[in-house]
Amino acid sequence: MELLFGGITKEKIELADKTEESPTNIRDLILWLRNNMLKEKEELFIQGNTIRPGILVLINDTDWELEDGPEYELCNGDTITFISTLHGG
Image 1 (tube, helix red, strand yellow):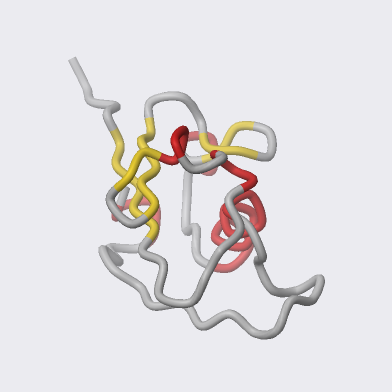
Image 2 (cartoon, helix red, strand yellow):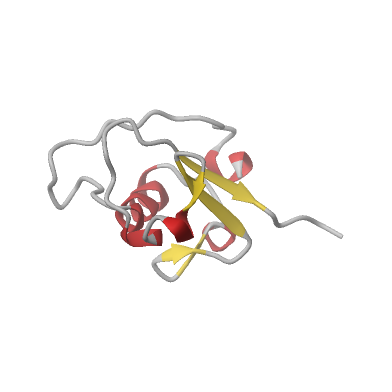
């Protein structure tokens, strides 16, 4: 994943008050990351308006499927982790 983001492995993102420019849920965050931080090969990170299959998303160390997935409302202090299970053969 870090190769897609120019070698960045951890980034603290400060979210402004809820506006159209500021992510409010995980789906908004994914699109914000695509538009502001993704350096290459968008298709390896995003498919449509969500994460592509093969990438695990954790919200505070819990699978996002247990936390409303892309509709999870972001809170101060949340840690969002993206882990690729994709690999070469």
